[in-house]
Length: 237
Image: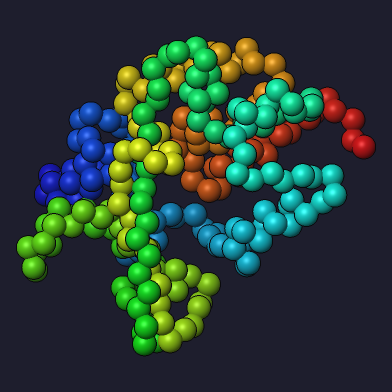
């Protein structure tokens, strides 16, 4: 009860603007509970980041003369001009079916405050990611309106005379990041899912299109499995 009151309850409200009782049980089930001193969030035996970061992975994947990349373009403004046998859609599923006039699904977004600290050969904080569940700082009495601070210098064994960290704040509106898992949204998503299953030639991929929280490894697995399913009867060229 003490841990719940000190950590889970206040952090959940800061992240979702809802208390745990207003959300599905999968929100708290994502938090690992262990009785050892393993300080890692995940308990997978093998954990790593891409050598050159995720950006380089996608740059290499897209570096092919058969692939055309178009940015700053609204898919819904150009979709009628696209000529392709199959579409892999990764945006919000309710946006895809906006013409139905149904209620919109609920999402939470984030804002990122970038802070650069000069003359800091060490670190700003003790770990790469530090969560801040409290609403008020016990030492100075000031409001703590952010959910976590991420200092990327900890990752990939970086060395520098300075450090950069990002302060994250959860909010409504903005770019959708987190599906809000409560009964109302789940029931509404099922209606959208039924429509998606009837959509020929379109595969709905990822967190927003499946209205489900994916960690990175699960997101990659979801994409690979859907690609295998959609191309199993396609002859290799």
